[in-house]
Length: 132
Image (cartoon, rainbow, N blue to C red; front, top):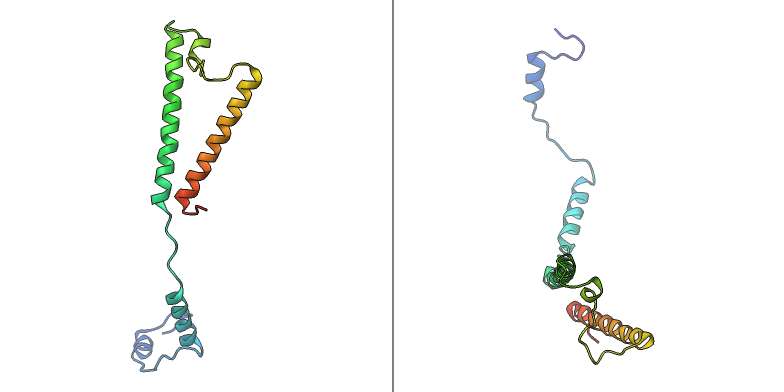
């Protein structure tokens, strides 16, 4: 009683009870073993250097927090009338050693920015372990 692709129980039993040996195709075992050997030789992936990245992340978060606190302090002082906007934003107020005048001020700020860049570069090279 076979219609199209329908099999009866006798045919299914005959197929399942067969003792035919299953043999892989030629080259299959060799290709699988080559893949296993290749994977065994491959080094593990390099982990992310969290020990070096966390201090830098902490410094960045600290800088954002300090900048935000400074800005909030200036806004609060101006809003409550304790200081004018010019007094609140005067960065060099009380620094007698700071050069006065436009050229002297520009040179001083350039020196400070170059020094900050140099310090950041040295810190990053030290954290990376590539100090000359």
